[in-house]
Length: 171
Image (cartoon, rainbow, N blue to C red; front, side, top):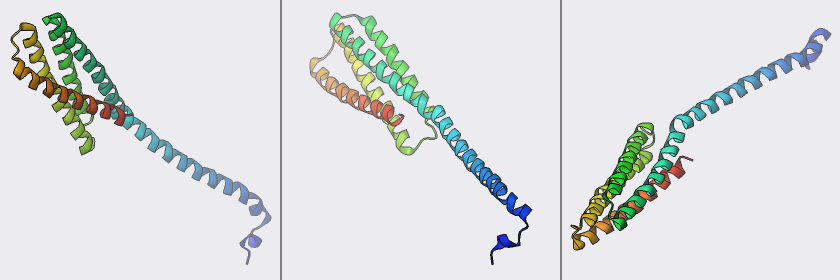
């Protein structure tokens, strides 16, 4: 009945060692598989999430600089600050293009989020920069300016919300 009774003493002595070697081999296979899966996940994070996080953070800081430059330009009447803000906005647009490339294989929700950032950024920049230029030049129509300010404020809030969501999702 007991299969161990039929083995000779030599095999009975070798059996714990064989079981140990087989168990260790199974442990190595499972461990190697886990390391391989973790390596692939880490590579995906390094190639996709980390650059997305950096670009979203960089765009948030650039957006703050754009707002500061435009406020400074409007209060001091300095048109060169508007040009600086335009350059920063162009850099932000380039970052969004890079973000689209990095997240090309991302989910549809992530791509929709990036498209919303692009739309909000374009709406904000296309509204606020001409308005600031017109205010500095003294040619702003105050009736139209109020509508433009509301539009730019809404676009700015959407842009900040979307950038923060992208940054937080990439963490």
